[in-house]
Length: 266
Ligand SMILES: C[S@@+](CC[C@H](N)C(=O)[O-])C[C@H]1O[C@@H](n2cnc3c(N)ncnc32)[C@H](O)[C@@H]1O
Image (cartoon, rainbow, N blue to C red; front, side):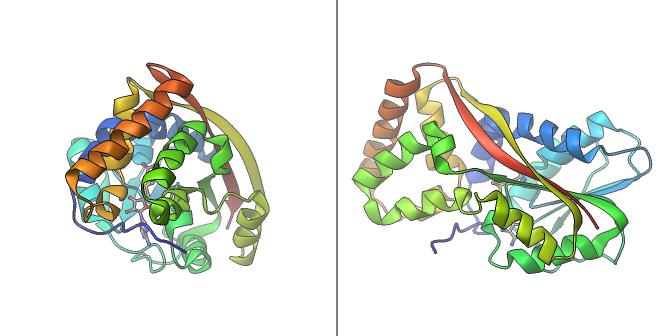
């Protein structure tokens, strides 16, 4: 399977924060927290925290959390997370989800928004989530549903297929754990109980088709995957993505996105 090159130094985290976080990650972070319910004096870990949106929202919702920790593989994402979390008392740690640098039973709540599908060792990562949770602690894990439920992204993959058919699989990786049954089984196999997987519909919002196109070309690891392509060919792809999205959604871009959100107990 193609992989996304998270972890590679690049400037995409700043554009991720500028466009994708307000575009849809913030609203879905609130859906995660509605289910995780962080409470006073609890300790919370957000795995694959990216620029920290789940923890930033958690701190606003529950300022008296005892501890809020975010872990991610990509130093550039954590640099933006630290900058955006000033004054919020959130710790950020660079590391791999499959080998969490925390003691057993250190947390009451572990969240992971749109991270698990990218991990090469998904089962091992979920066993780690369980190990660092106190007995009875809660996990909340979100992974996108099929790409067909994200029509703006489909408009984008259509353009990518026309320009660079060999690179289309990379754009599908975010949707590579779209089966509710697979997500449920992974959690059971990692030893979790009370597993429930919900389908949660939301909306992607971008002020223009060009911003939508830029969020993908410059705000995701696609920026790395396309780094070897001459600028004029990248510009042509970006224009066609914007054109496809404009045809289907107009301006501003308001398009559906659907995720599974799994809840489980350690
Ligand atoms: C789509 S982003 C989601 C970020 C964040 N959860 C959010 O909601 O904005 C995926 C994140 O997974 C991280 N990631 C990928 N593989 C990882 C791994 N093996 N361990 C920890 N983080 C990883 C990436 O660096 C990236 O920040």
